[in-house]
Structures are given as structure tokens and as C-alpha cells.
Length: 242
Image (cartoon, rainbow, N blue to C red):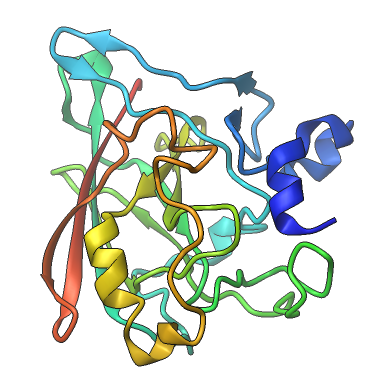
């Protein structure tokens, strides 16, 4: 089955055991918290005063298998691409959106060619990167609720708009939210014209046509500074209930 068809059909129905929870999730709207027993369906939003929860999304077909072993802020490894500094602020909607310190934040995304580490050699992804761990990492928020990662600008794969996956836990390791970060189309166009990306071409799916983001990216669209020459700085706030 090709990856795009997988996105249409979903993956949850094929799973029946907690022993394979790390593989849970298609890239549809089914929400999955790997490594926890709580599985919900649909986008989760909520408000406390003016504080709006970030949308819950699928962990996708390529979640990090052992995130606790990848505690690092530079997740680039040997991957080539436009430099991207990722700054994520975690806020607690149950405390008037104050900064959430000591939250555990995992991120992962594909490389310039649209491939994920830890997977491959299958119909989902032909290139075999099962023994690699690039573009995956874990950090703990500081007193300002901030984590910072050094990475490259993600590529894309058929059927999905460019994105970064994020899984947030509290300090005790309880899952709080799985979500995704969406990207601005204008910056995508600029980045994908660069050498590391141009052989792959422009993405075939925009946010508006993406089956994860097409219901809106109000709480998921990142802000950007910097340039393609010097590298971009992505800033994004994620609101969880803790």
C-alpha cells in the first residue's frame, strides 16, 4: 500500500494490541498518544477564558520508537537542508495559559527528501532508515515553558503538507497532547527551491488540502523569522491541559 493510500484509509483499525502502540496512527484526524493507554478520535480543542487548547492530531505512521533515548537539542544528525531553529513554548490552559515548566517535549519530522528515520524498507517508505535516528529529539521546558531544537526545514511526502510532530508529557511522563506544527506556504516555496530540496520539487499537498490540517490550522500554524540564507527561526506556542 502506498503512503498516500495509507493516509486515506487510516491505521487504527489494523491495530489490536498495546504492544504495538508506537506504530499507532495514520496521518488522518484520528488522535493517538503513543506510549499511553488513552486514545481519542477527532480534534480536541477547549477554552479556559481566552486560553485555547492546541488541536490534537495523530502521531502518524512514524512516531519515535524510544524517545527517552534521544535527549538532545540538535537533532540534525547527518541531514542536509536549510537550517531551522525550533522554539516551542508550552502553556497550561488550566492555569490561565501560564508557562508550563518541566514538561517533556518530543519532536520528529522527515528529511529534505520526505523520509523518516527509524523506518523504511517497506511500501510506506522504500528507503531503509531503520537503524538511523535523525530529526528526532526530546527536551524539557525551562521556567519559561520553552524548548529549543536545532534542525533542518522539513521536506514533504505525498499526501501531506509539511509538518513537525510534537508529543508533550508532564514532568511525570503522562501524555498531555500529541499535535503537529503547520508551515507557511510562501516559505515552503522558497525553501524547496534550494539545492537540498529541489530534486524533490514542490509539495503536492497544501494545508488547505491536507487531511490533517484542512479543518484549519489556527492553533497549529508556526511563525517564522530569519531567512533562507541564514536559516529560519520557527516559534510556536502549544497550549495543553496540565
